[in-house]
Length: 110
Image 1 (tube, rainbow, N blue to C red):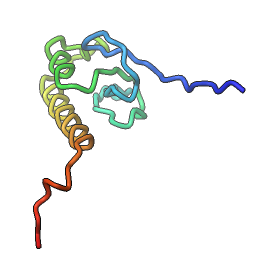
Image 2: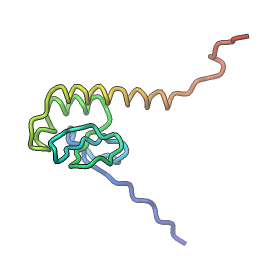
Image 3: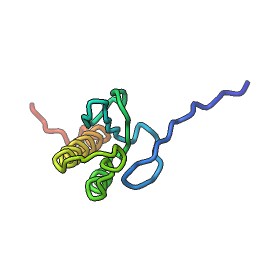
Image 4: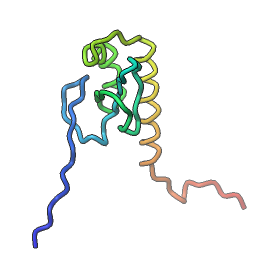
């Protein structure tokens, strides 16, 4: 019996042009009302564009104004700054989640 391996969806980052698994990317959505928003769930209505979930990718996206081209609209620098802050926060959360603490280093409260 052959077990089929589950296909991992890949998307291309607008900032670097590299392909990543979809879970390692951040989606930005552009809806019919012309609103641009960060889409952490990946399920918001509208057209989506992706960047890698790293500070370098977010800063490169601002430098290149990649969402201006992707959505054919003017995206404010404030949105790019908010995007960079969001990515820095998410990267910090991932680092904390992967950090292993030793019981030997814990303070003794006796």
